[in-house]
Amino acid sequence: MANTRNAADLQNEVARLRQTVKNNDAELERVAGARGNSRSALLVLLDQLHALPIDPEKRRSMTSICLQLADQQKLEEHLGVDLTRSDYAFILRLQEKHTGLNRRELKIALFIKLNYSTIEIARSVGISTRGMESIRYRMHKKLGLKLHQSIKTYLGEL
Image (cartoon, rainbow, N blue to C red):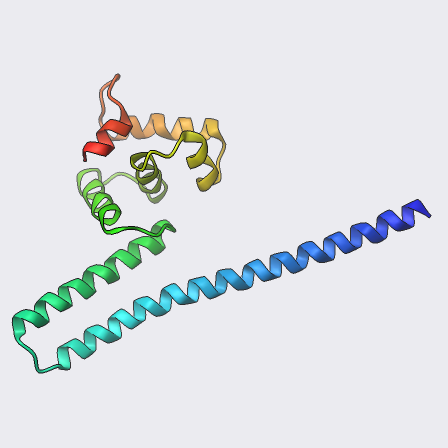
């Protein structure tokens, strides 16, 4: 009797977890679609700007802003993180100065600059704390920092 009850409880739990996964997948689809829609909306806005009879200098300025926002959204999608303007500018400077950094290292560098702890970064990236320490060590070398130079200080000054 107890085994039957445990089996029924287990089946209910599995069904509940499947429903939770299904709901989370639906939410991820919705969010991904919303991001794609805002980017395509920017591109539509760009097309509309070119058709407007306005001063060419104003059109150029507005077009530049739209292109920068589209680039920022593309980078946000690439990194999987929402960026402020200063975060976006930081990532661009970092990429320009250190072209060898991969997507995960760029994301980690942003988190380091924002004063996240190693444990918090490891959780957000989905790796162990020890793995995060190894990545920081390799990044230290990739950034060309001296032995006693801090990554956090370097990135904060960038």
